[in-house]
Length: 440
Image (cartoon, rainbow, N blue to C red; front, side, top):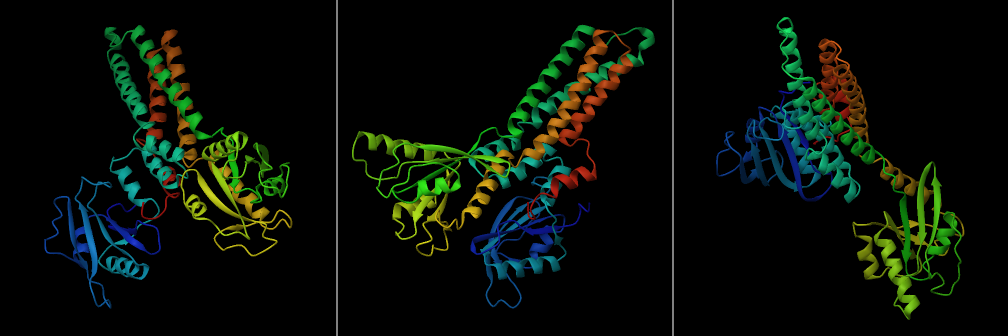
């Protein structure tokens, strides 16, 4: 791992937009940036600074407006000199900017190399580094909240505290071994049992949390919503349900639930009453229930008849983020569907396989959240650590030789060290950081 090179990558999504971020890290940051960035103030690589200026690019007649953010080592994310150039997100210009910075002595960053450098510099432990990936890949608010909790140290912090306590305990035990002939006890049996018991309780508590987070037991729920006669019930039946279908609006006054096996992944599909102006007590209750079910869904399939225009309210719903909404054009055997909607037909079966595949992918993502690999790795180390602590507890309880106690404490510490990254191998880092995207 060449950690002393100066690396560069585009840290924002490709495409056009208001802003693109080109990120650099390494000792030659200031030199590389100064080769093309001009500003009224000097770029001083000794303090944090934000400068407004422009970037001069070859074959571009006018200067490219740019903002420079600079963080000197060691007070940066990577622990090295670090810079970001914020420019207009025009792909040709961004590509040319990166090309010039590569010529100025930088090299292209690999996947996750910025976060890897942060880990190697001691800015993050391994669990928090994995949480960065969880934040990037979070598909909903629950996943984002879980990843942010781990990024804040929700998993690593209590284990680091336990590791410190076990290191102190091991020091006391080994000090006693050095003075074995003088029969000096640096820590009494009762205190040993108490501290080991506390350690086992901490490990069990974290293990329980990891097990709850690793795999979601919540069934992925899909709600079919839309106007009356939008084809919801027909689509529900085509996916495997059994709803009453009628051309008369308002036929569905209650909701129906059908569980589907989507290639080994279970999902619930819910058919709801059509959205309309309520005309009485029963209709009002049906409308309220329909809205409530949609709000609680993991995914809302907004059914839109292909022969009816999309209303302003429906367009607004299509752009909401929570819960996620997917527009589905129904009755596409009658007319062609707009390109931005998933075309389906309950009569011909067109689009149903694509819809099932999409639902399976969304359901699988919820069943195995982005942090699952990290949590699985941590759970393995917690299990092994607990085994060592239990054996250490038995050694103290049955007054076995203290050399065995020291051996078991070292085993527990090794597992905790591997979990937080105090002990690591190149293979482990490759497996963790190869899943990152470039620029992170």
